[in-house]
Length: 395
Length: 216
Image (tube, rainbow over all chains, first blue to last red; front, side):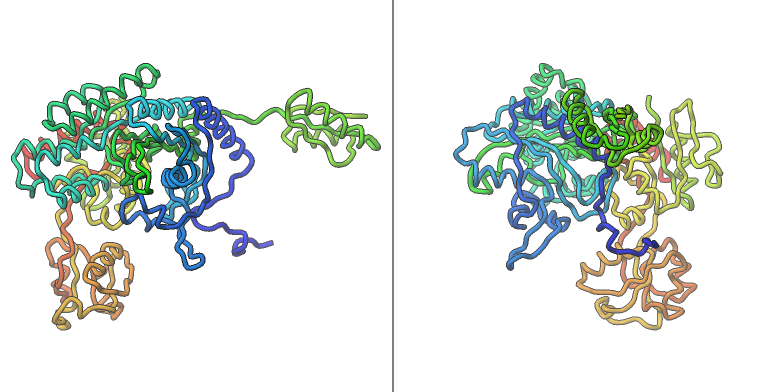
């Protein structure tokens, strides 16, 4: 059969099948993450894969909807969820409004973005994450960062770093220098696009003194260890920036206790792709993966946008990217469990069904039962074809 | 120290880029445009070089196959890859513009709406014309763009110009300047953070060299 042009065998751009080997490895990672999140008291939730477009654009910057997969139903515009934070915030406000706070929720779910496929990210990809709602304490941010670090460790990825920053630092600095809203927006946009040439040229056109210009240009370069916090503190002379640095110090103090501090660096000029972040934010990068592995942070205003004010923080981790990074770093675990092949001679079919059931019960391994009688030689061959490591032959 | 992988574009930016990086101690023996080796390594300095086709440099850097790269702003703007654009290196200056046959000028730019434009930069061109509320028919070409209007393939072209000689030779007149371009130092998102100290030092060194010696 010539299948090359058969449209019904193709899958749409940006989607893919996951075959047994890959699915098994992914399942093992999902189970580890799920157990870990539960052990920290986060309860798993599910939301619909489609939402009203207006819901999804609630927290995001204008322009994000360009990348959403949209459909029209009953005259309303719907979109496939492009991330999980917004749907969970919507759910928390509408369905869990009388639950006691803080609310600790987690998810492992597929999300959809109509964009060019990247390393470890198709248009449909799997994210695992947590949302902690109802606390503005540094303890909440620290727990979320520590949990993210634990999650990556748990999945045996070794070479990665967390970069922790705070939206308030840059914000405070720009306000201190009296930069108007329009220029602030332009600078932020250029920084979000990682275009430092443009960022600097915008700063050069501003009517501010030399030190202010130099400090603003330094923003994307404030990356490093704890000493960066002191450097940043000395640069800024306003309450918002100082509060941001103090908040990071508090979080870091707790991260030391969690044993997560060694994996954390600071990045005071950090920008995130979604516009809803308000406080401490972070991104995780792994060796061998040119894109971020995980990210998150505080989004104190989103629930208020849905009608019920409540501080919140959380993170999401790209499950497919985690698997890819682990493979590239050579740390892939083979989770294929030993399996037994049960075969039988003529007339022993019923006994074989009973024996297979007994083996499943007693040995706690996968048992593949032959579907017709075989000679012992045939069974030996079938065992290998079935990728089983042991043969149980009834004769 | 970890290896730093550098992607350099073949063509007019190659030699200036390699010479500039060498001054900042980023070099490798046998690094030439025509090298048969695909990756050229300096083990002592822990540097790898990839010499790539111009349009591929941003892709290598976006995916992290190269940590850093040097590439013209024109190519970078056309491909719109998600990379850090760290520095304007100042050389390779040119500009993107729209040109039409000298004897067929029209009064206003918008008089060209709904005509055909031949270009190597359909993405930049589309953004430009959209800004002016113009819909155009784009004809993507990979070289000798100025041939378009001559053979009747298109009414105009969008292309890069350095001196304007080619335009003159083909009796084309520039009617709109779209953007200025020059060579940029670009960096992968993850590498900028994970190899920050090394990239920070390189950028400082390059700034000093450019300040001391001027644009190469």
